[in-house]
Length: 188
Image (cartoon, rainbow, N blue to C red; front, side):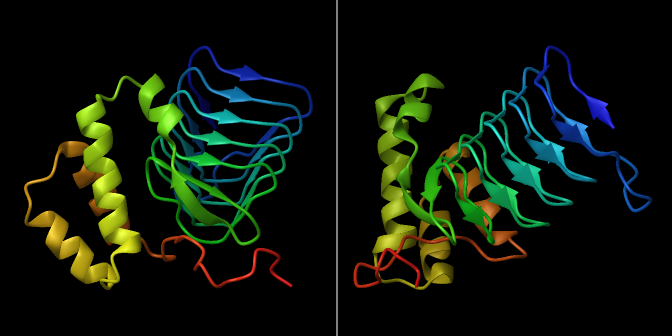
């Protein structure tokens, strides 16, 4: 178990050591682990991550820098949470959550971009518009995901959009998507 500098670890937090497979669980610098949050074995948590009360990571989860996990969020093993992603309280995550997005629900679905987080991170208006455009092409254009990835890759995107595209390309558990407009909100 390796915990970065200036992390705040509140009461009853559990940070599990790594297993023989990778040998370590890593936490970046300046992370906040609120009461009862849990980081399982072999997780990688980036810098400046916030895990609110009772947020839980299964084994081998990767959390990108500046991600925010609301209270009672549960992330399935081997999932990835992208840079600057925000998960609403109680979200049950079974697939990867792309960088710069917001997700909520059981099973967590994308609800848009984390615009407040992008602005606070110093992203320019032009860059935010480019990320918005990429999000629309990926999830709202009617293209298959592969067609959308190909179209965006051909447009010489910014490093941030490339990060988003690479994250999606390398997903092993699949990527969470927006709820379809005709799909009911209560998953009953």
